[in-house]
Image 1: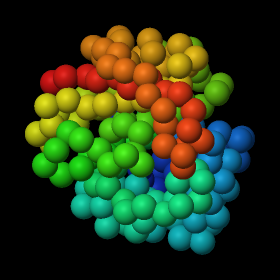
Image 2 (image 1 turned 180 degrees about the vertical axis):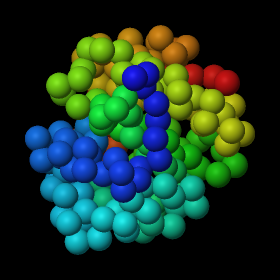
Image 3 (image 1 turned 45 degrees about the vertical axis):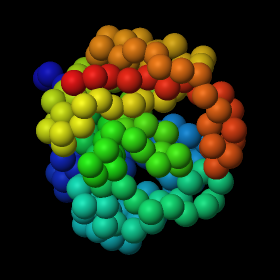
Length: 187
């Protein structure tokens, strides 16, 4: 079955929970383990609420906790699950209405994570390619993505989708202040 992006829904949730229980997290930052545990807890207490919070084009689902524990206002955005008959991972898109410029605490318009047992199969490249037409519908002229300098797999994903390296930068303190790479994909 070809890869598709699905809106998180009850019929897909058991596979998502199984991936979380196997140790995968959709959060690739330093807060990944906390996100994984938090999501498992939220699903066990309010599965429908958890799903509803993943599709939030108005940015109303409450504040977001950064890896350092600080809280910031949520941007409009949504998650899609990578699906080929089973959960392959997730991809999310967020934006600041009316501008391509994101607040300093937001490290890019797109984040993605493939479950470890399905990496190396081209799913992240395909998922980003499927997301780009959806992102373009917001009226943005481009999207920014960030990677760690040594994440060659993500560099390839972005380049395969037309991305160009913009600059090296220092991540905000909330993300540990490490070096990062800023990439851009124009529409």
